[in-house]
Image 1 (cartoon, rainbow, N blue to C red):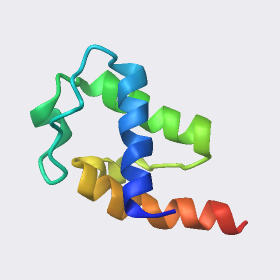
Image 2 (tube, rainbow, N blue to C red):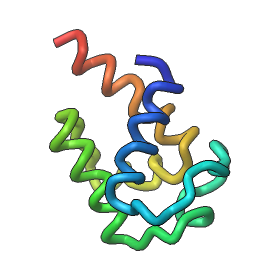
Image 3 (cartoon, one colour):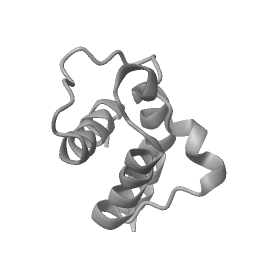
Length: 86
């Protein structure tokens, strides 16, 4: 799993939970909540979908690591790789 693939997964989850959001102009290095109308419940939905769809647990203390697409990819890519190797 590459970081680009990881970003696509995160964007797909966001698209599913916030279908009215325009994801075409998302900047990789800017906080998602600064670019999109996501509230804390939407963010929790992202975390829950990562767990439900991919078996990836994100502890609450790591939530800040999911702030931007770049930070999501940096944090999640190794976790996806661990899941693939199991």
